Length: 446
Image (cartoon, rainbow, N blue to C red; front, top):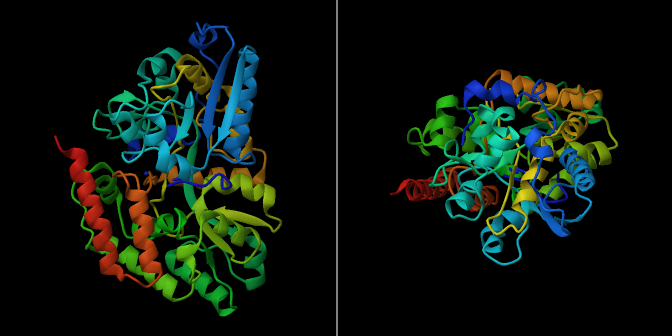
């Protein structure tokens, strides 16, 4: 599931990475970087052209700063090209990509979400081009071997993990718990390491009249919190079933029921604002930044925003007690079929994997996949440590809306009903389960 422009996706931002390749995603710090010989020998025309980029990262996020560097490097290589950057929001691209990409005014390269329901659908419908040859030419298939390549490949049915390359990731991401260290100190509480301890910390803040968790139900955040709670009851086989369709998922079983009931209980106990169903991701972020809530469960894409805007001392820890967490390689760069400058698009993608750009990610908390740089900032080091601990446990579980097309909207709507008291746990799971089953059947037919 992913994020709005003001909130640096997934993201939202959701198929499973193989356990064998997870070490490669641990920032890929020893991976080779820099332009390949093929890149430096590009046959791109030197005639004046306009090259259009769509992305949805805020300028102060690690990714936004890295893409700015990529554009700088690209312009130096191609002074004859006019680069036009059109800022989008995650929601705009999520909802309108299929319509836009069938029209006559399309970007040359765009950032897009991963998974069956997103990039897989564009690939299956012929709206983005295969990048398999480019992956070999530029060496992406070596830099992004193993699990990193999982999110880049899609079958002719749009199922992730096999087939042609249709996108290129160049950073990692995960969901954790941001916390206000000043508020923790004032309340006399410590970082929780188990779910029970987490509940006790929330009880301590609730007793002081403070809503412990900032989240939002009108967009992705509540769905990611729900998935964290589901994963607290789950193991890797559940993730393989839910994301990879390796077996059937029982939406009435203990994993789904336990996690969903826990979310309902947390709302009822006031751990979450009672108007959460009407709140957007930006509302969540502002609430946390302003110190109205001491904790926020969301993704690493918020890191740059907090560095810039948050005055209080803050940090991050992984969701207490969980071995599985929402997360994956980052969003993809994809090339629309109607791109007028596909050759330049491939070059630009390669620039984003160069040392210059990847090192910016490393220093700004962007979790690069091809950098040898070591983070010098203590907060970046803390973020990296959290991500590494997840990878060590083979803990990336992807995102709840990835499995089937349209599931993002289903999750938002169903959890809004739960939060607003219009649906109980059973009705919520019935709604989630029926949409999942229908989407899975449609994907697998034929």
